[in-house]
Length: 398
Image (cartoon, rainbow, N blue to C red):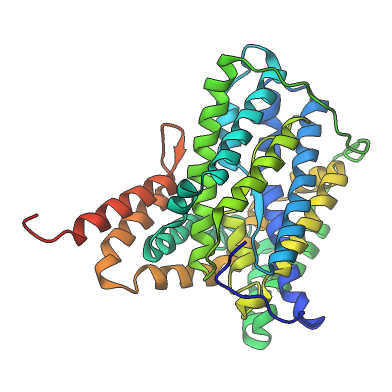
């Protein structure tokens, strides 16, 4: 796997603290923000509670293995996540003809299409050829909403959010590299002191993997498989590549698509949905808050992988605790971690004068959060920015 950042000598023990904390935060944010949506979407598609739990467990295990193995071997902060836009889409489809086995069959079709995208290298190269200014602008638009969360949290829960923001600011003043880890620790303390689990919340058993025999129906393939592929590529993989490019990492997308296609095929056999490159949480692992040195950020996805596995194994405890916690606080600490990435992305987007207007168009379209034809705002921001950039580069009169 090619990356624009070369591997370096093994990282010292002290150098691991900052990226490990960033990776743990990325996994917690990724899991906490949408795990309830995952369970609801699988249930709406016809899964029993046990099948939905199996699907979530299988995806957590796959994410753990992918994040650990790929980042450790490549020494690049490549991170993976589940397709949140795809899950949101699945929630609106309902149960197809054939029930949940047909959904598993549709998941397999999506996985096969992602795999073929990786094997067809011209298509993969085309996906990777995103102008840097547009990539940075799309990243900035994606990050804006989450970076507003600290201010929102301060307005909605001032007594809980103020200690977190104060810890972060003091960390910036006296221990800049550890400002975000300090904020994460304070957030954990605040949540531990204020979160009250409902009675019986921890009575669940260990999660289990339940095989689902897939059934292939035209209804499920057309209604779920094909749209899920488009949504995953447009709203997750494209932004994921853009996030990495905006942080200085040039990836070869073909092997990544092959790996995520295979992993998605395996999780589909246990009711799990599609796996892809991370987008917003990737900015936590690959951005400057993970480590000032881009060559020393790769432990962040490794740590994220470990946390995903623990969240999968301790699904009952994690789900109960996170569901009972104020989500705005988890979003707030993530927003603090992403402020540096937002600043860098905006700087990169506006660096070239000839690309500023296309970049601004990409930024506002992405930040708008619109969804057209089931495809999210990052894709439309990307398309609009590239079209305007190409139009402005055409000589006048031609």
